[in-house]
Amino acid sequence: MNYHTLKARQRSERDGYPTNLALRIHRALSWLNRAEQADDPDGRFIFLWIAFNAAYATEIDEQYRLTEQLAFTSFLKKLCELDSSRRIENTVWQEYPSAIRNLLNNPFVFKSFWDSRNGRSTEEEWQARFANSKRRAAHALGDRDTAGVLGEVFNRLYTLRNQLIHGGATWGGKVNREQLRDCVNLLGKLVPLIIDTMMSNPETLWEDAVYPVVEI
Image 1 (tube, rainbow, N blue to C red):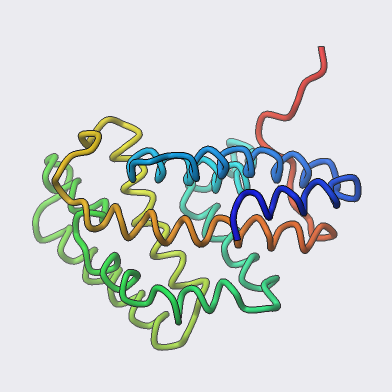
Image 2: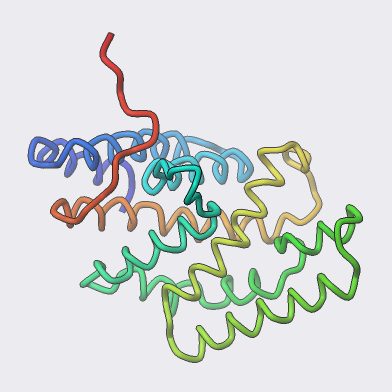
């Protein structure tokens, strides 16, 4: 499944989508298209993350604002519940189990590791948080809790996203390339499935997209 197959489906169905879903799908597909044209893993990851962001992001009242991680964890849980054909589940348990375990055990995509290097926490604190995170992931893996596993995985992806977007890595660098390749492969598989699942469930409440189109 790629941009071209999803775009063909979107063109045939979009008149029946609610406005908010139509805008999310249109934007997400545009960034998936750009991601598939990227010939470097750094650029591909960034464009895939923007595609994911376009699919899930919502505006939350400041008084009740959730962290971004909680927002996309809730979104992933909804998707897993809607995925009647279990394609997301199969991706986690059959296609990428080794890459997922590698990510969950990799300190370089764990935020608290970098906090300790920047003096915001101690070595003991980040090690304890890492151990707790791995325990949560192990429980989710043991229970075959797809949404729980993806929640932990996307927290790691979010750390990598921050590192790249905020200039904390060198484009095309030689350091820590293995986890970038794993993240690109996993996100490249999941983003099309996310978009397809959303298109298959137009009647579901998809909240208004952030930055709606303004007619002037």
